[in-house]
Length: 87
Image (tube, rainbow, N blue to C red; front, side, top):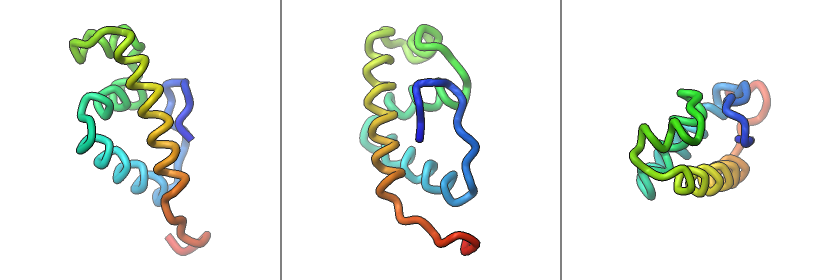
């Protein structure tokens, strides 16, 4: 699951595809929240750096980050899993 830390955990290829699909759904609902995830997870930016890059307040980034992590974790938990060795 996505945690508060910045590093994306090592994921198997199937989970990476599920994460990409979930990020696309998040972007369709709220592009800024998706950008927050990209900045925090993939670019390694701090809350303050993310706020500056997105032209948002640090408080907004913190709220978006908390919501996005919870939303993505729920989406990934609900995603169907392939049987081991069937990817």
